[in-house]
Image (cartoon, rainbow, N blue to C red; front, side, top):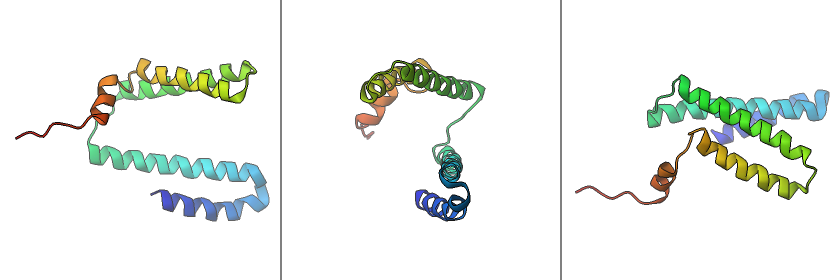
Length: 118
């Protein structure tokens, strides 16, 4: 999936960059990444068979809004970029738990090996 995205991105950049320069490259990259992410979501949903309803999408939108607001506010602090990144990272890690997109139980389940049933 990623290799196909890279190839498509390069081919589109060869077409778009001569005319639109950096803006063309940015739009091409954003478009290819969006389509790739959508396809990966569809594949993961089919393989893992997880359900997504209105509540799930509400939490996704809430998390994305939180990231945007935190990023904007951290940029207003005029601090070293590493400090700003650290602040944004920590706040957004908290936001992923606050929006209930991830729980500590899920993290522990991913990290610790599952017991085999006899």
